[in-house]
Length: 160
Length: 276
Image (cartoon, rainbow over all chains, first blue to last red):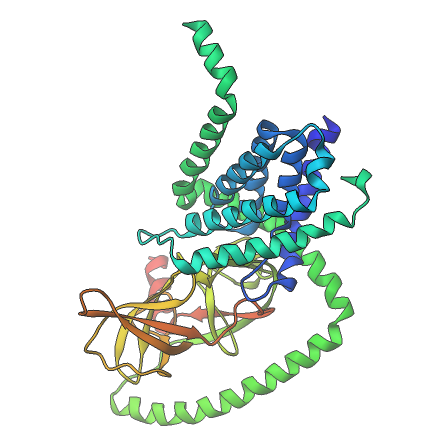
């Protein structure tokens, strides 16, 4: 209970605070990494699809509140991203996490998808357009998030 | 039947859970304008902003000198701007007196610091460390020395939520004074666009765009940006004008909230009505 729910939620809340207070300093124009997503994906890879989806849903809610954005957009995007991450869940958690060849494409795919959904749902307008610029923006943010996710390879294995 | 449902559930419980969670998320989206949801959001962002403010205070301890010099620099630039505007004001007063028009409103600038930013291509927002106690109210204009940044949408005692130009739900009534063209500006996810302008309107690259006198929310003549492109739509009758904002909303740290004080005449009329 403590290791599986309380501590991850506590860490996620700290990461949400960092996402909106510190991470804007490393943004390149409006290209910004999402460190909360990295953590949610790691959680799902470790605990599986159902736990991950629920975790993504609740963290998405806190993310929406802290972001002052539309409540529901982050919830949807986090839930879907963590659900897809669940397909890569394996009993041998290290096999996925510490394999750069496997982890980086997963991270890029999920973060790009996250940013596309988050952007489209954020357009509270009838003229919702999934235009070229949104896809480019999402791919760039996805790439930046993937680059930042490399930090986990610097962390001691026991801490993950 | 029960066994069948149980089998189906055990095989596809992940999908059922996903569908339920996604439906809940989508169902919440249209409720964002609900008063109760707004109250929850205001409480939540005010709580969250406390952490942001702590970080801002801590970081300012290490960079106070740097910040001071920047503020002095900004102050000087504003002073120069005020001087040049004063000349225009003098000229304007003469012209207005000819039209028997009296200027009946005044603005006060409330300075504030951004404590958290949501950098997004559709949901751009700031939380600033000024709220009800600093006389901030909903719908007040947020700007800096370069021009318009956004609008205050929610206010708590000590913090306010600002929707920036990069928020797709913000719509601004704007004008191109040189061409006398009016329109609505919105963020399309990548650019600021002034929509549905008659193609016959002569608009050139580099034309200044400012807030319109027709707006009931934004005071008139606040600089927004410069025209960079004009494109006709499919019918060819209307055009969309792309605007490059004067303010880089991603790098802003300090802002001013324009406390719009209504005309003293209107105030006194309202007071009279209230006292009856």
